[in-house]
Length: 402
Image (cartoon, rainbow, N blue to C red; front, top):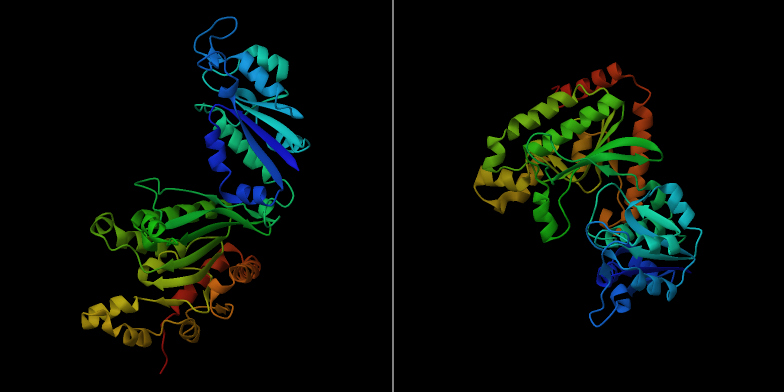
């Protein structure tokens, strides 16, 4: 079992971190051992002093050598790691080197750092997590521990998480703000890079408020377009996931050009030179969905819906009441089967019995396979063919022959 001791003036910071996430599970499963050593317990005198002027002079205060020396000697480990801004920049090679040792002391600096005599006597590694300076070594220690522990066998529930968790979220429309209802960024599926874009609703009251219930504002659609243009520039295919009750109808959103932002997205997406794969994974309502819904291949999960308007809004407009939403839903023909019969989508992705939420992992794998299959189909086409086919696809929607 790997053992890690954090020597710090603020052990409570480390202890709180141990209560959450994968680290908590690893501790419960006895895969690792993390303990804290309160440096104050080794302080000098009645007031447990731990800081003093630097040896050899200089501004500020440093941790005294005596408390650190005693703390390290009484808590021996294979290697001593000092967290300091002047240390070696943390990288993958250094993480792999530290993984060789089954016990480490992580010594957290404070004030202006460490007395040089302690470093000369005890330091095996001096490590920095970056060029920024923070108040102490506790945050760098947590950062380093997280990086090390994720690479220890069985700490992660799924070993593939280490190599497959590649999503890098990108923020902002470069004009007004970052819309939390619209999420986008770069990621990989089976080593193939994609630009992922999608609406996000949240999973409880607090996160739903944070995500504005999945209703994007103009800034969200402009962010989505910015990311799509970035993908086009570098030849990266685009995957769009839709789950929204519609675009945000607030006064501020209208003042900042909600309709124009959606219309511009539709216009621009018809000319994007890279493959676009669209999947409705929940609600697909109105222009809010169509603003990121123009693609070469369009899929729907089995129990989702896609419509020009939500049944509730349709009922409110026609009958001035929500009481007729079932009638409106029937007339709108918004189910996946209806959409496929109307040739508005290309395929229905089957869900487990009872719905996607009953077996999320199975749905993830099913959607993943469908995305890869779709990409392989579209990758055979050049940019001119993609654009011509996409425009024809949407031009033919809604045509009727009597």
